[in-house]
Image (cartoon, rainbow, N blue to C red; front, side, top):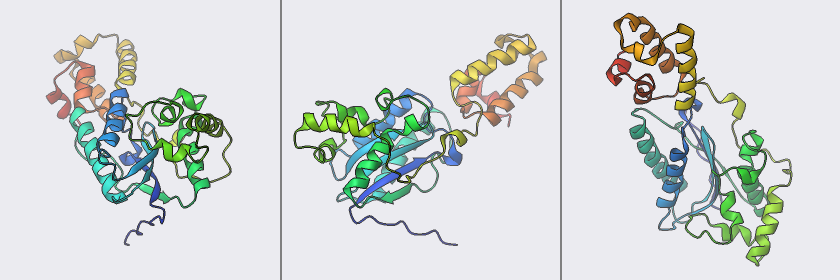
Length: 266
């Protein structure tokens, strides 16, 4: 059965959501999130489109875009390919990083546009990651609340002028608006509590798991190189390959063994 065609927005403004393939994490550390934001800026150097807001969660991203003279599918393809190349190279992995199609909804009026921006910025609050919107540093909220900060590709003036022509006043109104309760709209999203299918998501979690596992078997990590611990080493590698999002390189680093040993074990 053919896929339903993407519904085009008359305003050219879209709320976009991209998510990890099989809902896996697409950001494993702060460097990854910084790189994604850099890519957003790089792909919009010529200002062919406008970005009004973004929020980077662990396994998905919300972006509010006006496609301008570009085309939304091409915009997202360039962003996704660039980040996937970076991620796969860094973590020594192959295959799809993102789910095949990004999700989108057209924004056709100013009231809903502002509601979506508020929703995007409050996503980490809704997910219980922070208590207030200003605590989360991986969204565009801070860009809106600073008078300077002209190096970002975020077109905040277009949004702020909906509140007031006086930018300082507009920022104050924007802050108050961002903390208001939502107005009952149903927004495009994932349920954060259901998305983590892997028990071990980061290298720090792997180290914690490793510490408990080694204590349980009363051995040191250096013992894993001994032939006597071959079966135990194989079991640990199998668990990490099955129950974590770590790459082969990361698993080898965590266990202090050769990556070829990890590759041979499924």
